[in-house]
Image (tube, rainbow, N blue to C red; front, side, top):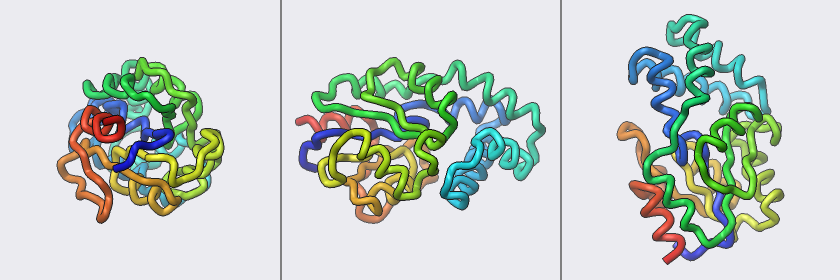
Length: 201
């Protein structure tokens, strides 16, 4: 993949280990994944932004979790950690930013916990759309001041990589879940270290 003028990263799966927070709040990994997937399905169906915390409540109810699980998730959000390979992002010689499907407040918390220096963090609440709506990616490009072809989107979920490509960006996919399949035609890498080496070297 050719060197990009800027890179956009999916924050909550690409950079941050949000899966651990969902696992703890749900009491087990499988239930946490089911809950997260239920919320993701609601975001994709909504397109336009709807209050993220309400989607958390609805998703929890769908998989049989009590309201207390939502409170535990939001509490655990304050202690979310980046994936160990996220430190490689600091080696980038081009501007980068975070794009994430959550509220503005939760996006700020997660971005601060990443301990990196993005140009900005764009939340779904601020953009008014949820990924994979093309408007979300376009809002990030507008803020970065670049064209789609000049920018790479690094996704932590297949649907996100597909959405970025539909918006005209070059996309790379970092596999964080072994149960997720590689999107057709998208470069799939195993770590952010590999992503950064590919884009910088």
